[in-house]
Image (tube, rainbow, N blue to C red):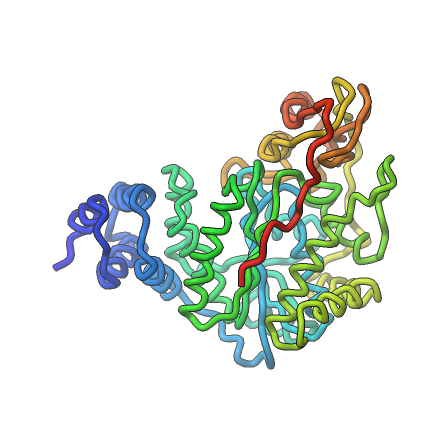
Length: 438
């Protein structure tokens, strides 16, 4: 007979758990037969001692089979998704879904909400009046077949073990554990019924992984699990050492994505397009998704096709169709009415950002959540006027705080003034994509 305390003791002593032990413990906890305090003890033991590749695969499998999986067999052809480990201004899903769908590859996306300083795709889409992310799985399949892509939230029937365990990880300081991250991500993605996955694994001051080295280790663990299920997978290691694009904040990020799909630019005082990094990362991720499907003979060909879908307006048409199918009214977007600037305290070069502090400022504005049950204000957000390496003068605008709750601006302003550094010497150029792992 398996005993929870003995399984905890075994992992505490850095021994390898069997698939049977992992399955027993996780399923018993999901069913309410094991209390939170014993699950917390196992999580902490995993946090400190890690898991073998075989244990990680077993944990993923148990989470995956704790609920239903989506049957996508009626969708013809290759199905591919993208997962990002999260950041500030990270909005590429709203562009790459339509781009890849327009290129003829299906993109069924089960997305999440923002938690902590990182944004969530569902929150962005729900800032579009009427947009319904809570579609049934039948409707999810129907819309994906019809227009090539659909965005919904995780249902209560998909990976319920992960949902229950994640809530406990959040309050027991075990979120950053590699095996727990991998099992959480991959169980949900495999449950989607996809054939391929492109990972955007971020590192830097605004990411869970602070170094590119740690991001690569996480990417390799995720790749190992995906390959054990026969999935095609590629990982891009990308920087979150500065916010992505021009805006962070739900409706503001929708505006940015729509304008990029309309081929608009947003030139700063240096003549540089503030949309460029969002556009480029979206195209790079799209190219890898298209190439995984086998539709192109080379990555370069896939990038050319992705860019054609964006520039031609075909991606925008898919996005508009998706909004109509899911009840969204793009013409009804409500924009913020109040603003306040954050100014440079001295002259010099922007040398670095603490992107996590930028995200915290967003939480203070109610653009993000401290706790899962918090509500967000879709009009709140931050506009970015500079990037690393830009030369600024004292009094130049670094950020603009935007929203409809000006009483929240003071605390956000204070946090933002502490989120960047200005030095006399120009720093090295910021690198957006550090590495690609296939």
